[in-house]
Length: 555
Image 1 (tube, rainbow, N blue to C red):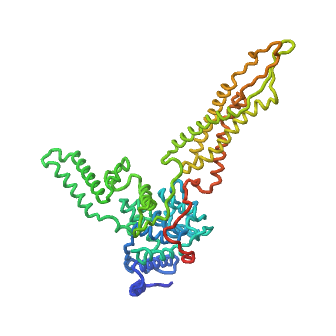
Image 2: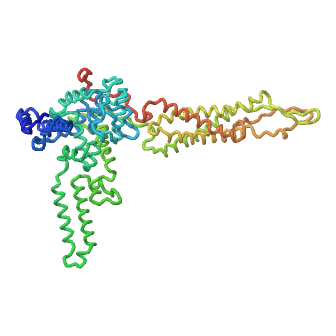
Image 3: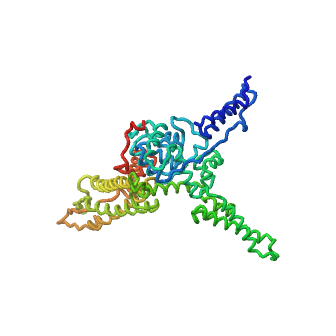
């Protein structure tokens, strides 16, 4: 059985430190890995005991991470080649690691709900930790930019290998090399800046907004809160003033109660003092975080008032999404500038349709529009529908008989088919036009189409029947004047709107256009490969702010 003495481990650590080429954190990581390997050797019976311990461990030497500014992040984004730019957005505003960004598929992004679901790393490798698979909420602004990037470079990967897209993802080495090439063009970025520092930017953004440690840990998907504190603890504001104000608030509460008050020792003044302390801590926290009343309101029925001011009432899920959205909104709105030049790649197009229309309002708009169209269809049908020609005669016995001229089906089938054909045309056109309303694509629009076309068909039938009745009048074969001199009379009858007046025939006429519209809408939805039904438009003519570097520069 082989044995290794602790002094040998200490000498090995001292040699690494004396070399001067390795950082303290790297030497600490090497010692930790050696300790893990030797521990496995002890477990397998190859060593008697593990010589690595706290006494042989070198100092961790964790240095402060570099945090880029928002202007530097956007300048780095613009200096990158076009196809790996989405990786910068995923790292800076979603906190993805470089292998996670390169291994992210388009199907892993829910563009409708604004959620990123990391599944694996580049090359199909498993994620770093079990917590790395946690869904990441992203703002609508980021979904728009990512949707535009995916449309410009069609691929199953969010970060494709080349500008032409394709079926292969961009490798982490290619992205890291592109970052190293682009950082030289960004003033202020140090030479050691790498892709992983984009996660530091997101963490600093959350901390500056007043997010607590658990919220930052959840968004960064760290294993423990201790890891988050080790990496970003120096970014939180100094707590000296917080503790000083807390003690001062307690003393102030005591001074406000007279010393000779018999009720001073009762529970009621104590509760009042705690409430005053909580109020003071709330005011202090709002002053330190710089957000005023951004976190007002209870976080839950049992949450103390002090914790309400320390943690957002949404549990931390919405705050990071809003922060990233504000940064992207400033960017797409032309507010992000670097060196006096706008760094906006291209404006994000507006969604079609009435701005701010809710799903209920969209249903009402479509239903009313189709109902009005039904009135016009009824008038058009009454104008072009051919009337029915009939003949009435007296027999030699003096009996009154009547018959229709031509084929009977021509009279009672053509006119209803004409009405059904007009309603079918309206249904197809309405479904195609409703599909153009990108913001309202979905089941709600199908409901609006169905309601509007049923009411429109009813309006068309009612208006058409009324107009032909007014035009041709009501025909009564028994009231037509006949005599021995004029035994034959030719009459005109108004054409029918429906095939018959039975419930089944009426239902077919009213429901037919709604079914056709739903079928057309379903075909359009099935033909769209995107899970957002194409509701997030992309610009037709992208115009990069900086010239794109050739592919060979990053391959």
